[in-house]
Amino acid sequence: MKSRLPAPEAPYIAEPLAHADQPVHDERVPIYLHELGFDELRARLAADGLRPAHAATLWNALQYRAQTDLLAREDFPPPLRRWLEWRLGVECLLDMPEVSSHTPSSDGLTDKFLLRLQDGQEIETVVMGYEGRHTACVSTQAGCAMGCVFCATGQMGFARHLRPGEIVAQVLHARRVLQGAGRRLRNLVLMGMGEPLHNYDNVMKALQILSDTRGCNIGPSKMSISTVGVVPGILRLAEEDRPYNLAVSLHGSTEEERAALIPANQRWPLHELVQSCRTYGEKTGRKIFFAWTLIAGVNDSPAHARRVAALLQGLRAHVNLIPLNETAGYAGRECAESSASVFHGIIQDAGIPCTIRQKRGIDVAAGCGQLKAARRKRERAAPQAA
Ligand code: SF4
Image (cartoon, rainbow, N blue to C red; front, side, top):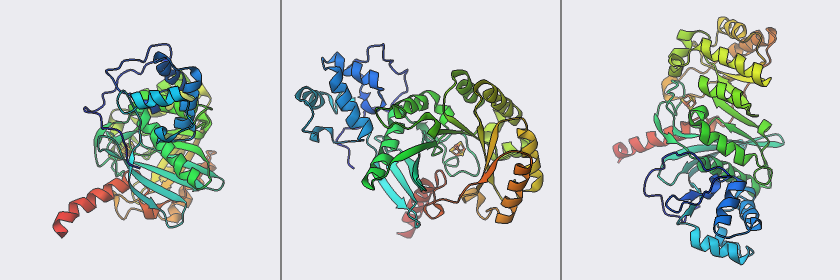
């Protein structure tokens, strides 16, 4: 859908977000309505003399119905309509990314979208269908600074953090897609482009908005934050007792092995990561999901599985084995089903629940960053072909 709003003149610079008990009315700084919590929206409208009921109507349109053409709502009360005509597109903006591309999988269960933000950055959002439930996988950054060697996004580098409204807007996009098919979005995973704990404050703000029962109403237990192992972020989640699921990417069972796959291991070594997970488990009592991407000949042997089992002993853990989605750096390293099955058996025998993730959306390059990487490759190839 085409945005009717002008792009901001300067790139967004993250600033502390206003709280409900602080005035949010500063006309020099545009406000993105999708990143206001309910109380903040009410305070913003109250600053212009509107009643709380108007805020409830606007919130419902934005966050529950996921509507984008607010001025088309002829049933809005006149004061709210006048306010929108006055403020929208000037002091108050909407986050409405344009769909650059939409790729459905051949099995009809996965839809991958490349969304273009107002400054031209492109991010990936995936809608996945499982039996009786639908999950949105959203991005938290444009690009990523972590540089994991098996990840297409990691190979692109970091562009910028996403604002809370840009994270919320991806979920609202998924809701619109599903609403059109009479389906409901139940789960949210932060496993798209970017490292969520590297953009901690904006991510937490977005999750708070998305869990509001008057809006998207995705329960915190249905939300999963996936991290490559940003230790300060894990400790902060524990300290603040955030009620979301935590998934930690492990991928290597020794410091050297992990550092070769995940450069961030040099900053937050494996032993510190496991210790932070123990602290998290003790403080919150929550189970931690550990992701292990199986790469043939790199980390898929029985010896690797035994080391993983030893590493996680005593933790309330669940291991998710993920057969590699091929990226430029790891072509031809797909793990054999038999190796995955042996790996799985060793972890289970050690008393740690373990699953092998279904290969979803392989034909739509549903691995993080693969759609954008594929487009870049095509764009680079185009001039030569001409
Ligand atoms: S796997 Fe995640 S953390 Fe690692 S580079 Fe890719 S997006 Fe970043």
